Image (cartoon, rainbow, N blue to C red; front, top):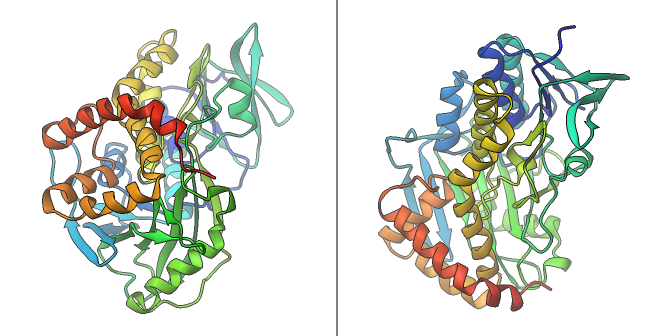
Length: 405
């Protein structure tokens, strides 16, 4: 076969976005995934307006997804139901699209664009004098101009290139399952920001109800590693506590499948090197304040493809710089903020403000919707920059007094 221009390891949203974008511009693309076509991926299934914007750019048919108009935030007895804002950058709606169907649609679009997809095939990077020059897969060595690591949370592929979590930085854990509910057509995501574990510890994270529009709701909980008692946190127990909390309001049926947990990376030692780039979760591109990363995965995949098409020689370095300019400040602020809210009294006090007034709730909405980054104008952008500076000053103290234990 013709030597691939790009080899993508991982056929999730990030990898498929890179394959679609590159193949549509004439690149020879081969994408590998260990699983079979139509495999499931544990996830909340929620798509932010930012993710919808990226899918629109990729010209993905969204008719199979359930449209979401906004977010319902609950903190103790306070409840605010907010619509996604209309902006010049992103549409004013999100969606819920179970990953089994979302990932299949994206992979099919990559194949339609001309990418070759090899399912149930494990690929590993091949090095020559410190440079990634291709992959080993299915008993053969396949050279490539660029290897795109889109293998999700750090595993053997990420470790081989050095795309590992930064020691000491926070990470998240989450668990989800599906339940039947007559409210499956609800047009708002619901997030309960005031969770407590079985020991009564306040949890820096949230419980979610994401209506899928197909008779089911994705129910789950997530927590940050900075919380007090994190080492003893039982996610199954936390999910059961949340289920009992929302069971009556949502008229929930029993769990339709065994709850499945996963880890959310929120930092990375390096996301590029000679001959390779890491995108999406493999690059640590996950919002520490909501655990969301599909939109960042789509954007980083498209960016990596565009830069390779423009100039293969400089693509890895330019990718790292541009991703940093777009996301690093916000993600750094989120990681620092996670140390702050790991302290129970700060968390409980802060939540009163997060949804206490309309103005602050609107900013919380933008943060939860991944609508804030280095390019965000207006009040939310100014708040981000000020918060980043303040938390930067406080960061050494926050880390020394972290509440985890």
